[in-house]
Length: 176
Image (cartoon, rainbow, N blue to C red; front, side):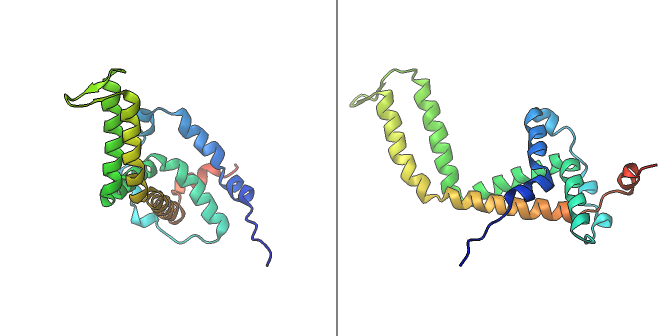
């Protein structure tokens, strides 16, 4: 049986993902969410339609990914929060690691003395590692990340492919 070869270059070059992500990296967070489109425009049911063919779907996705990019970022953040709230053990592990690192760094290299025991910063970091790694593996972060990627892809690409471009955008591209 021959191996399955997927032409990833052909897929990514058609969607121009590299240029799209480059513009996302160059913006500040306040700038990123300054151009949020209104909810009524984002969920405009009058503009929902099935694309005619793959070319139409590609132009819709290219247009909508740039036009609604801030709204799609909010959708991704909301799905991330939902995935953490439904996987409470992963949320606990994240809070444990961040809180432990913060607490150990507050010692500023000094030993922790609790009266009956003394622990160095190295011992505290090792203890945090010994506790958090098994808990982190048990919390199944890979499954959560894969669910997040899949749910984001389905919802964002589904919206981008079904939402028709406004009529003004169609006329602005025509050559006169």
